[in-house]
Image 1 (cartoon, rainbow, N blue to C red):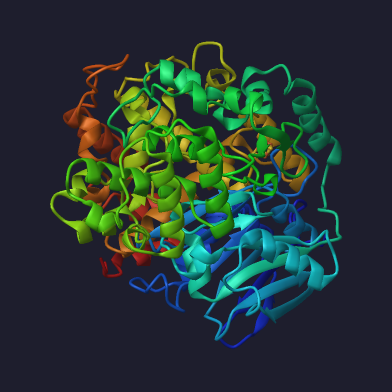
Image 2: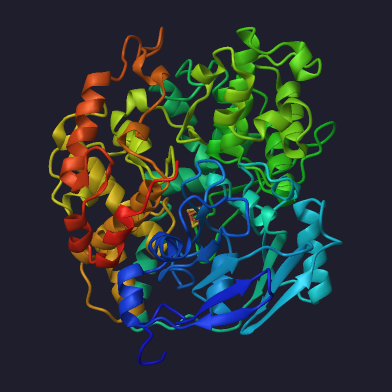
Length: 634
Ligand code: SF4
C-alpha cells in the first residue's frame, strides 16, 4: 500500500480507448477514494465529468465503467460484487447495475479498482487484463457464439482455466436494449442495458487474471465481521432460506401476502406458486449450489433438466427475479420451462427481468386483441403458454419477428405497436419493473418513482422486510428510525425511512457489498475502517451514498428528466379484484404528496427533482453546480 492509497484499494484505474487502442493508468489520491469510494459514486464522477448531455448511448461517445468498491475482494462474505455504469440505452439517462461472482475480486487482485472503456472498436475485440499487462485482442472468432462456448475458448487460448471472464452474449452483439453483461456465465449485471452498450463498442469480453492480495489496513477487524457471518448464516432465517432454497425461498410467503407479481401485475397471487418455488426447485431439478467470492451462503442454484429441455447446470439456475418474470408474470407454472428460459437468457446475455416483462406485456396485448397471430408469427401468445414463453425469449435474443420489436424494451415497443399498448407496458423511465409489487409495500413505490435508473429493486425500500424485532428493524435503529411502520403507510415518517434506506443502499453500491448479506450498519463501518485504515463513521458513509444518488440525479436532469418523470404506472393506482390486497390501491394524491415531501427532505428542487446548488455544496460537490445550468436535451 502506498502512502497515498488507502487499504482496500489498489490505487489504480485503467482507461482503455477502443477507437485508437490507447491504454492508460490513473492513480487517484486518498481524498478521491474517500469522496467517491467506488461503484456507483465513482461511476457517477466519471460519467458526469466526461459524457456530454445528449450523446447516443449506443454511439462511440458513450463510456462504460466497471468499478469495484473498497469491500470487493476482501476476505469476507458479500465481497464478490462490483458495479457497472454507462448512459442507458433503455432510459437515455443514468444507468448502473451490480453483479457478484468471482470476476470483480479477480479485477482487484489484478491491481485495478476500475476500468473505463471508451470509443468503439473497428472489429470485435476482447480485453485481456493479466495483472498489470493489458492487451486488446481480436474476438472475431467469438462473435455470435453462446456465453459458455466463449468463456471456454478464451480460457483455452490464454492457457489458464483460472481466468475470469465478464462478457456479453449474442443479444448484446445485436444491441438488444436490455442485454446484460455476465460474470462467470451466471452472475448478471442485468439492469439498464449495459450489454447493448458493450455490444455497440464491439467489445465481447473482459478476461482477467490477478495474483495480488487486496491490501488491508487492519485484517483483524475484517476477520471479526467475516467470522460473525460464518458463525450465524445457518441460524438467521434470511440466510438459511437463501442457502437452502435460493432467492426463490420467499415465493410462498409473497403469494400468501398477495404480492407475487402475476400476469403483468394484473394480480398478486399465482395459483401455480408452489410449482415455481425455491422449495420445489430444491426437491426436483437442483443438482448443486453456487456462491460468490468468499461467501459461505451459496444462494446460487445449479439445475439440470433432461430432454426435451436439456438444461445444462453450467448456466446455473433461475433466481427469484427470473422465476417470477418468466413464471408467475407470464402465468407459467412449469419450472423446467422457466429453467430453460433462464438458460437461453444466460447463453444469449439477456436481462431476465426485462425479458419476462416484455413477454408478459406482449401476452396481455395478445389477450386484449392489440396483437394478433399475424403479429406473433402464428404463436398463441397467451398467459400460461410455456412453449410460447421459451420461443419468445429466443426471438428477442435473435431480434426475430415480434422479438425484434420487444428487444427495443416495452416503452419503445408499445409506441411502435400503438392501439393503447402503452397502458400495459410496466416500465418506469423506460426500464421494465422488477418482480416486486408496490401495492403491498408502498414505500417501494416511492423508490420506483425516484430511482435514477428507472424502476429499481436493489436500492429501493421493501417496507415489508422490517417486522418488529427483525435484524432489519434493529439495523434501522442505528439510523434513528425507531418506529415500526405499516407496509401500507405513506406518511412523512415512511418518506424519511425510504430516504435513509435509499441513501444507505446507494452507499452499499459504492462499497459494492452484496445486498443479501444482513450486516448491520456498524458491521459495514467496521469492514470499511478495517480495510482502509480510516476512522470514518456511519454519517460519512451515508453522505457517500447521498452523493452517489445526487450525481445520478444531476446526470438525468442534464438529459431533460424532471419531477414529471418520477411516476409509476397507472395500474398501481387501481385495486386488485381478489386476494389479501383486494380493494387496496395506492392513493394517487398520497403518492404525489409523498414525492413532494421526499424532494423537500432531500434538498431537491421540486420541479426538476434534482439537488439544489446548496445541497450539492453540502455534499461536497461544488464542481457539479455548473452542471445544473447545462441545457436539458430530452
Ligand atoms: S448471498 Fe448469494 S449473491 Fe450474496 S455474496 Fe453470497 S452467494 Fe453471492
